[in-house]
Amino acid sequence: MKRKPRELKPDEIEIWRRVADATTRMHTKPLREVQRPVPKKTQIQNHTNIPHFHIGDSTISPRVTHSQKMPVTEHLRSLTPVMDRKTFNKMNRGKLKPEARIDLHGMTLAQAHPSLNRFITSNFLNGARLVLVITGKGRSKEAEIFSFEQKGVLRNQVPHWLTTPPLREMVLEIRPAHLRHGGDGAYYVYLRRQR
Image (cartoon, rainbow, N blue to C red; front, side, top):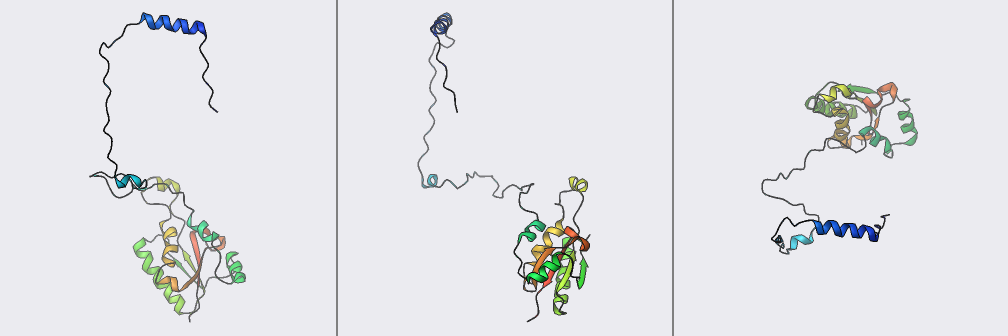
């Protein structure tokens, strides 16, 4: 709440008048008022969500270096399971043994993507249901300071690859692995049955 300014006392008003009378004016000419041009009203002014753009400005938004979005592993854990609840609970507790595993740890994105595609496709065609994809957790925080890449590039990219064609039609569920199978550095991928 803003306080109301206090009123000056009569003796304070008298002191102020004496000071004001004793001063001399610095500028003899009165200052001119600067008149600002009045902008013309256009239809664009009605749209408040259109950002201003000047010739030479970049149309690309600046890259955001910090992210407030939920980590991939937390996002996957928050999703409602699609598969059978009993099997899902066993898988989450690490009670189901993966039928096959692939270790993408240390690969580049260009190497990992085709390897993952081959691995998922061959296991789907062979009738496997639960496979383990090991991505690693990414660099340590000390190494990340001296790098421009985000931490855990494969860990963040693999769920995206598994939920887009051609793998989307083969994958039923993706979850972070139990600690005995790699924890946040690996994913359980539960495959659909062949039709």
